[in-house]
Image 1: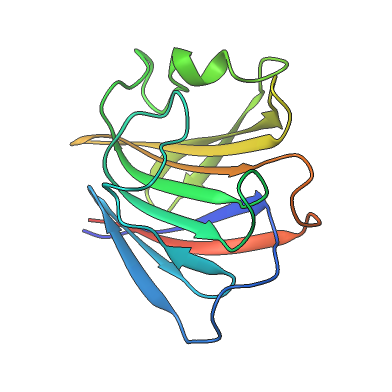
Image 2: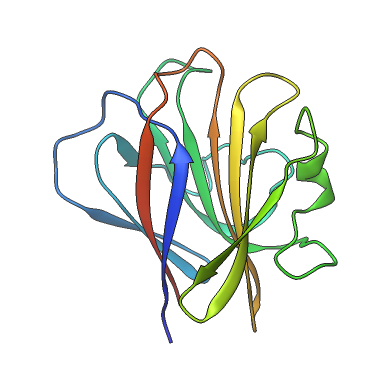
Length: 158
């Protein structure tokens, strides 16, 4: 059964193409996206540090290195011991321990974590526990990137 997951992140950036919605495929998840997002080949995409995702759907915004936003989505290879918990390697990247916000996604329960990073920038991670492992969607926006805004990215669990 598939669920549609809304991902709310504090990201907005100019650029990208003007085409209609497209789909990026990751392990256990499909991400529908449109401008300003562009797909990155998973093998060539820089991972989000600490978020070890198996075969990720990888998206980014247009921009100079260090100024583009990035999304990675898929099954966590090294999940937290707590279902839908934030992996320890991600926790250490936050300037302060992020508060978990419990969200209901269809019939599943997930947790969203938001915060500033120790090396500047910000990170939003949504983690949903499934019977096949935890699925994560991470959105990272570097400091000095485009002006903040809201982005809704439809996510579908497979």
